[in-house]
Image 1 (cartoon, rainbow, N blue to C red):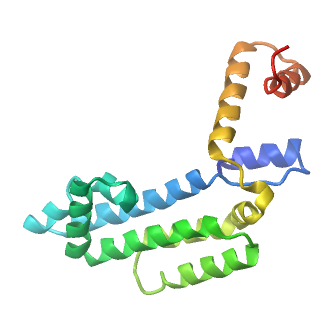
Image 2 (image 1 turned 60 degrees about the vertical axis):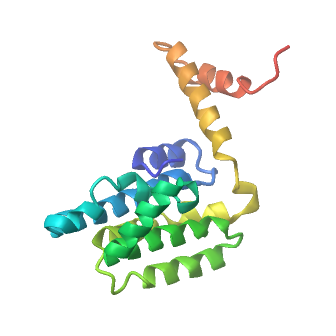
Length: 191
């Protein structure tokens, strides 16, 4: 699930036995927003010709290096060479992505503690806020380490989309049990 408080509260109320697992896409989106804040701060800190390296590079920074075309890789290399703080922020973003590869919570925790320790002298406020958010939501992130929780995100998003369609079709109906049965039967093979 997303880290939205309403989702967590609803799950804790309606399914207290359920394990909460936060979607890595949404977690990484928060890190991307922190990187973009650093980019904007650097843009406004610089003046004149120094700004040209940063202008128009938002999506280059937010992309993974291997997903960029050769032109994008060249401009990313130039940008990272021109601005030390953005270079550090970019490398920290790429490094954090390794968190999802761990299969044991203890190892993932040590990785996170080490990653957070590397923020210590960097003066990257958005990253510090991101690390604090991860700390507050650690249980739902650590749950991803268990092999049974490594669910394909496409499946989850597809199921959520089916539920939204069923909810739209049942607009005005107030029978929660009927909605629950419709959701459960949407995954059955047709007769």
